[in-house]
Amino acid sequence: MHAAWIAFVKELVDALRDRRTMLMVLLSSVALGPLTLVLMSMLVSDIEKRAEARQVVIVGLERAPTLRNYLERQTQRTEPAPADYERQLQDSKLGDAVLVVPPDFEERLARGEPPELEVVSHGSNARAQASARRVMGLLRGFADEQRQLRLASRGVAPAALQVLDVQERDLADPASRGAQLAFIVPFFVMTAVLYGCFNAALDTTAGERERGSLEPLLMTPASPFALTLGKWAAVASLGMLVAVLACLSFLPGQWLLRSELLAAMFRFGPREALWFLALLVPLAGALAAVLMATAIRCKSFKEAQANSTLVLLAVNLVPLVQVFGRGGEEPWHLWVPALAQITLMTRVLKGEAPGMLDALVPLLVCAALALASLAWIAHTLRQAAVK
Image 1 (cartoon, rainbow, N blue to C red):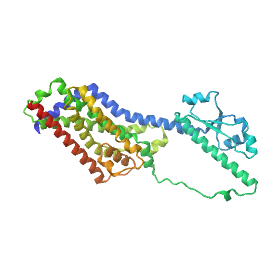
Image 2: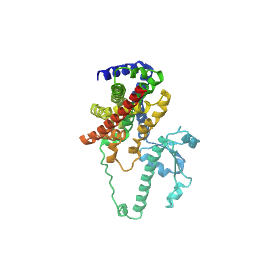
Image 3: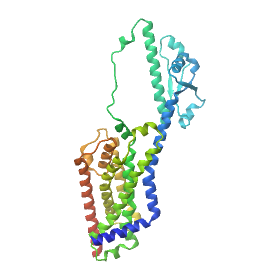
Image 4: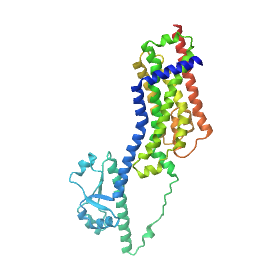
């Protein structure tokens, strides 16, 4: 253990000396997540402001006084559309959907025929898409009002044609809805841990082999397993440090949220941060060992980077199973590293404390993965020492 401690201090000092790399890792890992959260809140805030503005952009409103009267009674403000509204919608310069009224609107309405209205938006324009949904809701309200007036004029009670009275009830509490909006938090924190381990893991293995400092290290009295343990402890410590900083960065980051809806629903306090750290610390140890095991046989740092790309892709893509999975959470999710941490961190954001057994399964999987990787690294170093 004394030899492992010496190797740990040596590798940790070497990693911290590379200030430029450490600064880039810390800035990208710690600042990128809260920055993305703030940018998302700006988008939601912009949509909220447009909804509060109660503005409808219309072409040919003078042809539909009945529709204009309805919109004014709904406290909607009408604005004429620009002449090149289609081009502006395509370029995302216009953030409101455009309602196009046909010339024969009033005539068809008077004859009892349905006028053909057109709501113009663009699929790549998120603001226009949100505005289009709001305009469609207004038009449905106008159609319901006209239907009731026609029935009343013919002496038919509108309730006579109402077959069902449907009431929608949402079982999700505010914490669950906030977890859907804050899905980026677990992903960015886990990615920060991955990249916190990445450079140090490659430098302590393939980097030393490329610099020619690995062979003299193997000639010391320290056993290969002691060297492996010390190197792994240094890499894992850096990953855990990044995990702590990444989790803590979201605490002040939520103060900068510009959307009142997102700020009211998103809750990430000390309790959530502690749960995140408890789940990420074992993952940091496992990722450090896997990255080192991947790079230990490489002869150069560049070769190790290329080989470790598979690990990066796996860690980044596996959590997407939960995002795109339609069946919800499955029991086998807890047995897959990275996916298990994302699953449990999402539970924490919903206000649910993971059970002891659920938290123990990912811990055991990460421990087994770390031990297997460390055994492989020690075996490789032992062979190199013999040669």
